[in-house]
Amino acid sequence: MAKLYFRYSAMNAGKSTALLQVAHNYEEQGQQVCLYTAAIDNRYGTGKITSRLGPQREAATFDAGFDFFRDAPTVNCILVDEAQFLSPQQVKQLHQLAHVRGIPVICYGLRSDFLGEPFQGSSYLMTLADTIEELKNICTCGKKATMNIRVDTQGKRMTAGEQIDIGGNERYQHVCGRCFYQ
Image (tube, rainbow, N blue to C red; front, side, top):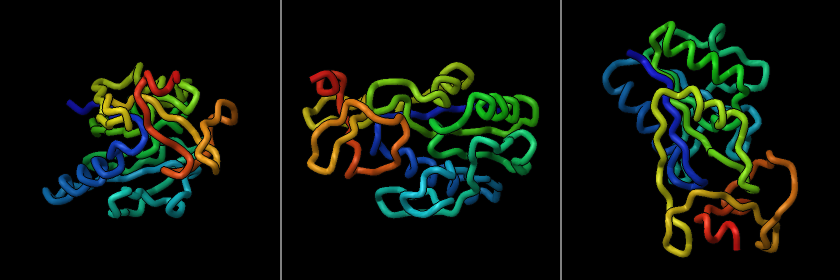
């Protein structure tokens, strides 16, 4: 039975690396995968899933108007990076793909933003995913990192701003709950 999976973590825990490894594993067995990433994420170029370790793959993109149930090809597995940017309707479509068409769907993303607020896509994934898995990362203090903070160009923490502000290690840091509140 196919499922909808949500694999989440704080930033820089290897979500994209894990996704690329899963794609490789399916393809090595002669199976077809379809990779998606958010069109809004252009850090490494639009339509690219890139690991901070270096590996990169082309991917189809989704935006607010994309319909997964209607437009996704029939493949052995669908992999979605930056899943926090999915709309509630898109999460429902991915859930339906898994349960009606029998296609496993594995989504990777952040659970919350730099203020500790949930991303809408992640909230729906936490509700509808059949399997939820946390990928681990470590805070600079040594505890498990579960939160993200945004920093300005001087490295000072920002406590206000738009939820979506695309950036990498120069803009965001992963921290534990204690460091998040300090």
